[in-house]
Amino acid sequence: MSESMPNPVKKKKSNNYIDNKKFYAEMIIYRRLYDESVIAGEPRPIVSRYIGECIMLIATRLATRPNFVGYSYKDEMISDGIENCLAYIHNFNPDKSTNPFAYFTQIIYYAFLRRIQKEKKQLYIKHKSFENSMIMNTLVDMAPEDRSHYSAAFINVSEKLGELVEKFEAKNPVAPKAKKGVEKFIEDEDDET
View (cartoon, rainbow, N blue to C red):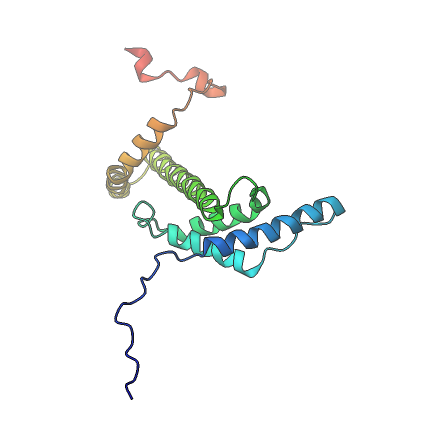
């Protein structure tokens, strides 16, 4: 008796890490529960474990793309993406789309972009605050050895973060502020020439 030989042709492994058909079926169930809760005036239903896992997988996997890989605040990006998905999960309409994967990927993608902008703004604010504190320290009467220490640190930081400030200010131009108080009496160097 001959034993049956295993089939040498292996089944092609799918690159999909989420079963979109099952995800869609779960979203139909969730949307039905959501509609019923709205009619009954009850709070929104809890998301199923499978839907939560899918959203988490999408966010985690999207964060590994080359355009998001180098950020130190990747965990915050992922958290923002998951939070936004859960906030807008009820807007997914199974009658209009059969692709919840694409819907949630878009939500997460834009959440990542918003987090990156927030972090760049915070870095800009930190640098400007440091720059202003260095300027204020030079205005204070210091011993010469202290003054040189602050100046060296200021020049070093300014060189490294100057490009960041230029890019941020180019994208977000700041309108000139109206002068108040003492500022009215201080003339700019440009006004004198």
